[in-house]
Image (cartoon, rainbow, N blue to C red; front, top):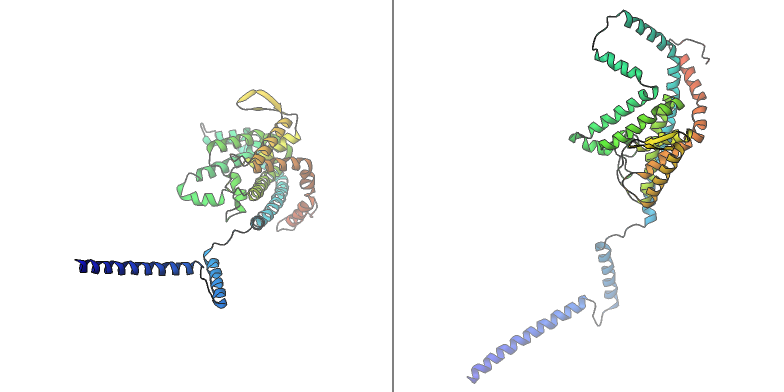
Length: 360
């Protein structure tokens, strides 16, 4: 029994010693890896430090660039939209001047065509219940302003229907919504002016446009109005681009609200004493000047406080553009169109089959 106990004790002692030796080896290796080596050569230590730096450079993520560099890079994307805004505005008013020239030139011919049409209408047998005749009668009863904005309303309705086609969703999101972080930057500035996803949004904008159409077109003429409306859509979108880039609050926008605000601001600036009323509260009236001040104050507060329900930057940009155009822009742009019109007149007079000696 004593011999057996001695043998068991020796086996257990050897196992304990082996376990202690393995533990000491593990602790010794771990301490070396953690940097607790007592004696190390200078060259080996320097090489270990360099390897550690290399590993950190490889594993650690790159630090984010500083905010000023990121902002400058984002603002660099606005160069093309700025050039597009200036160029499109110039082309819009230049095209409107030529359009007005052609309209005045063809007015006499149109008059004789109308006389001929009336004479044929009298000798032609009348058709009862003719749908085309009823449409023509409705169209002739519209004012010049209502006829002009009918095309704009039809374009908005067509784009609204395109939003309901599932296969066009990606195309509509790319070209009919304006977003400074999108790949397409320029053409959405114009196309988003005719784009509405909500029926209530479109109905509200088109009702305001229809209500103010007669006043502004009697004040400007249809050619100048179309140029102002299209330019306002692009300019208000560019202001939205700038504010979104400055605040970092990227997101898509759409709707004709910026252009509508330009129309509203232009009429209110030109006729500040005109009486206005809200459609749901017709018993309360207020002057156009006070309405414009309230709208500008509301959009300014929304822009400062960061309200996200509307694109307040586009609203405010459109309103300020309308005010500027009535006070200064009309004199600077539209009244200086004569050299362009004269160039176009000389070009048309030298054209094939053109008559006249080239004088106005």
